[in-house]
Image (cartoon, rainbow, N blue to C red; front, side, top):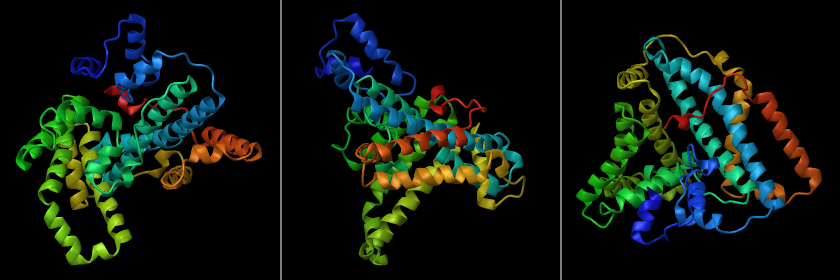
Amino acid sequence: MSYTIEVYRGHQAAERNLGRFALYVMFYPQLVAGPIERPQNLLDQLKVSHRFDYEQAKSGLQLMAWGLFKKVAIADHLAVGVNTVYGDVAHHSGAAILIATYMFAIQIYCDFSGYSDIAIGSAQVMGFRLMTNFDRPYFSRSIAEFWRRWHISLSTWFRDYVYVPLGGNRVSQRRRAFNLMVVFTLSGLWHGASWNFVVWGALHGTYLVASLLFARARGALVALSGLDRVPYVHQTLRRVVTFHLVLISWVFFRAASFSDATSALKAVLTNRAGQSFSFELLGGRTLVALSVGALVMCELLQSRISMRDFISRRPAIVRWPVYVSLVLMLLMLGDFTSEQSFIYFQF
């Protein structure tokens, strides 16, 4: 669709080479779940010759290893516990559902961003550059910022081909709110024809509309509370609130049905008694905690420096122990028996 629209708009010349067009459409690293590439980026790269570049290949392999770590050492372990609880919401306690929801937030991020890292890295090994699809989304300070960091290729696709044609920001506040609700409801339907996904999308649209409507009141409240004088506390609070708003929406995304989602939320709010969460399902809570801790530490460092560039600039006597350690961690922590497929393969 993006190719057809861009050619229609005159932003991209029609591709006359059938083989090159077919390669653009079926470029295997990102075919199944993205990043959703624009023709201006990928088609132009297919028109030039590519020679092996050691630095590019090394950087791509590093990114692939990191993506694989997120998938098999974190996401697949967490999936077992999450699937157990959300597969039987009615009999689990509110605390168990809450723990499983936190875990799902980490699972879906590691699963999908891990896939994106593998796709981007494998393309880079061959000399192609795909767009960044995730940029530490759980550090966002607002829902708008979250969508600038989460599944970037899809959110920009909806922005350019749905939101902007509807008028975007160049309309009245009421029409802008309508545009936001349309875009995010459609993004929910994109994931599947289910009320769960519709509510998930509409909930994010509601968050954005509420942020738009109450911007002045929010600013006045911040000034009245004095949070504007302690920016670090203010920004941390914004990140915590944003993360938990996203967390609520993940309940609808993960639950098997709309009734399961509402039942899960009621159980958490009322602290319903029931079956507790079994950490034994994770295959060792210490190993999973260490893996998640390593993830958080790297994400924090990534906000200041590029970890791949930093490692690449170290001498071989430092680089290779790091590479060997990552491989060993994959072998020791990776869950290679559960055969958990990537979550976004279903969409």
